Length: 309
Image (cartoon, rainbow, N blue to C red; front, side):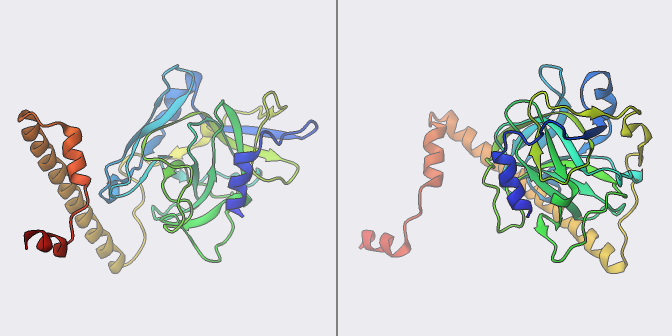
């Protein structure tokens, strides 16, 4: 169902009609005087945690009107960049709402919204893909559109998302759609940028699928303070440890060691290649020629033998 919703998002010019009763309750306001405080609630999570070389940041936008999630994503060793709110020490209860909305402006790439419903810092999250429009607009993702994944792979027969215990929200750009065998057809390695004005919860008295608001669509705003006013974040470095026995702790220890080794190898390989390129460049060789030589197919051994005979 989620893949069908992605197609709806890509094709929908607007699904908010007159008479629809919508109520928005902001959680993170990433514009105006509230932006600095909201930005402090987020942390980045890129593929460097698994030996990749992608980099990203959530920063004030160039025009100063909102925040920009931007960076450079590479497919070497990973292929994803993400930003997420720090884990809440007390969950956010969104049981009275229909889903999550984002005020966003995109770059033609498809992103995913992550929702964590457990205090465990693990690999299980609920995801829903969305394609931000070219102009700033509100994208609405009902809770029913989210699916449970583990490392982007769908979990078989999962329970539905429980909106009563929201511990974390995040935005991810990944080369995978849902599962490593399913590629994101709106992904391209290199620079990316999506502008975000606001992330919040919405209530809709009508059941509907994911949609993008039309400009000027009538939407009521919650009269109370932003939901972020009641958020209780874990202090940095003090988030609860993952649960599990001795086997789980050993696996995490091995993973951290392997991750560190992979990072060192990537750094060493890039440094060695840069040194070689610089030495050859000083000899007057063009970098474009060197790159073509590196990517040229290697002749088969029997072909080389025939040439020498």
